[in-house]
Image 1 (tube, rainbow, N blue to C red):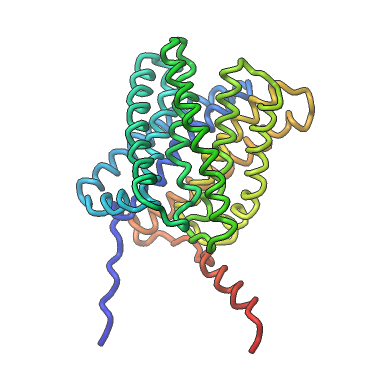
Image 2 (cartoon, rainbow, N blue to C red):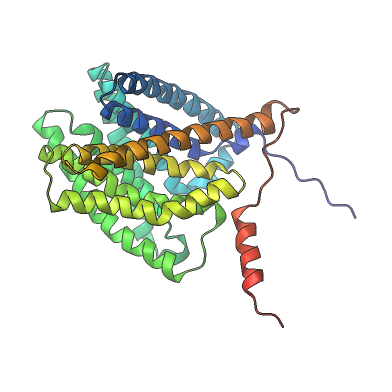
Length: 349
């Protein structure tokens, strides 16, 4: 008997939370261009910030439509111990957008920051309650577990610009809380990566998230200390650089060699956050190679973000909008590569 044809996903069914990463990436990239001090850099800072705000509104509207049309998909993702963490990218984007809007309308930026702070507090409490509510499967200890904690770090990163002592105290609380749980999770995640089974293909690009707590913690430390260049600052910055170097090599290899996936967006925000941190660190150094690092990262991050936008739009247009549009070139998936490698390594009978 002939098998029933597989029903193709609609655009709303496909629409993933991962696309919020494009908002946080563009916002962070706009801040990085502002650090250059160039005239074009300041112009790009405003342009990219406005584009990221517009994308945030568009993505939120589309995802709200998905929530209304396919609530069962949202409920399924929310119940999943891995996918629930990805909801944090919405709150991360909201907090970063508040920082951009502060430059133009302080009152609006503050209101959005308060909403984002309250939202990430509730969301993180729900996630932490699940973690401690019952024993977790060690296989689920993946880098995406860091997303809620990255959202918590965004509270002081965007809130320390406000001079109120009350707000500073709130930022200190979120900062210490995020550091405490990040230190624990880094050990748990590395234990899983070293001693458990290979990551699933969609999770592989998320490895670069391991550099984000170091990048963001350094930026927060730099703001709180007024730019102190000490061993703590060096530890945080070079820790971020080391993590990005260790995991970035394999991820960029995947992006060049394997079939495009929307999960590739998870590499963009870590790179943008590291670029911002490198500009901050370079301000306190007279060493040439330290001064060069942020500009190399800025160029690389800008190219990657542009490439991701192009591939995302091409994929969406070809799959869901224009039927006659040429499809993206078919390439090997990471899962196929792993399977082929295992077959080649298997000893002959």
